[in-house]
View 1: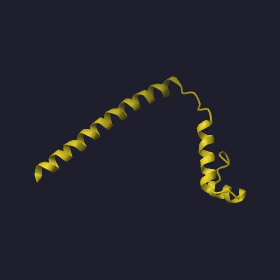
View 2 (view 1 turned 45 degrees about the vertical axis):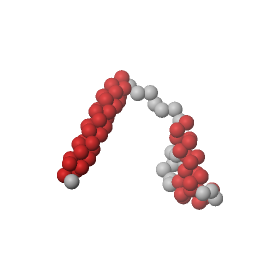
View 3 (view 1 turned 180 degrees about the vertical axis):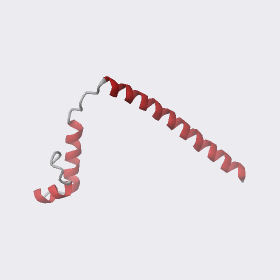
View 4 (view 1 turned 180 degrees about the horizontal axis):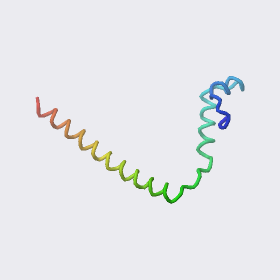
Length: 75
């Protein structure tokens, strides 16, 4: 099912199972599959993206607090 490209609901109907049940099974199987090893370049890019993501989260948090501060100041 994972490699066939068919939808979960189609396979579930064919097997006489609930789509949610089959979906949980498929999710569990996908999680248990061994991920491919990353190349050195991919590891470096992942590290850079994680650092960038952390910075963007901090910026977003700051902007949210600033917006709340200025919204409260108007009143």
